[in-house]
Image (cartoon, rainbow, N blue to C red; front, side):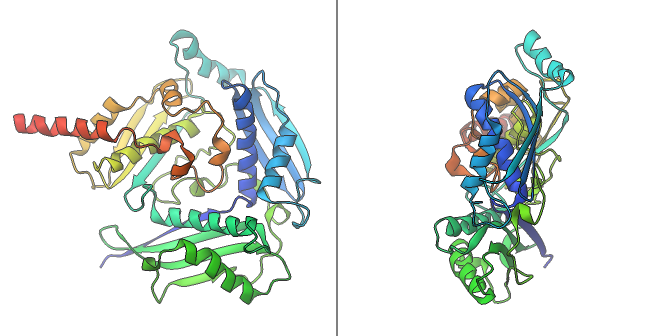
Length: 396
């Protein structure tokens, strides 16, 4: 058999890069709470016991960005007992300016003339969905995220009180020649911990309290390898051990290396930046296509020019899994969905504060968060359109 492996990685909310993402999105949400039209592009860096916040904001609202950052660090769990980084003593510096007038005129131009805003940047954005899981995510990415969330939960719920906030997870799955998942070949969990805990306790506790509650036994085989803190020790972690930057975990934010990525990060950007909004729209379209059973796997790509309201290109790739002609799917997508920037913002309800909920454990697949881009409200329409095309063939 022509089998192959797929690996996906996730990180916990206490990972340095994720701290930066959450701070950037927390500031964005704080502005949107007061001004739904705010233009925000915030980047965050964390290092040692220091946070640097920089970027551009155009808004009449006033937000205490330093306090927002401090509260996020506290909620993550970096308190006084955490090594080298804590919410009370962390030094926070800011360098925030107004949005470039050159960018603003591109975004505003159509708003003045056509009642439609232009894209805040150029680029290509991708969305993906498949039928491997209940939420149409690749199973390796879904399991990695679930392990990372469980790692945080047992820390916060004091089930494993000796855990600290930093952590990573990774799942490798073997697939058959049809692209169907067979079994897990390896699981990796790296978890920051108190130095007084011995390795055997760490290993057995994480297997029992993190891996077993998440991983269905059907995916485990006798040869499945489990690695817990492969170096044997993970005491020094978080920003005390590594610099964190906004937007440095784009694969963990999306599909774990399954499907393409346009390269643009999400966190800290208001929805006029199509890096974020068009990627959400592409996921929305792909997920509804798969849920409508028009394909088993679907990747949607959207390309925009800065200042233009409509995309330069819309492409749907079903990887040969389409149940009706691929050309029909591409046409139906254009009939059912609108891809102007203004329509995306309205369709997906992107002007409201909600983005910090997406900043850790992935922006997609979170059906309990009520994100509009995860809704399946276009399934019936897509199916009806597909029937119309099929009926035309029989009529002819």
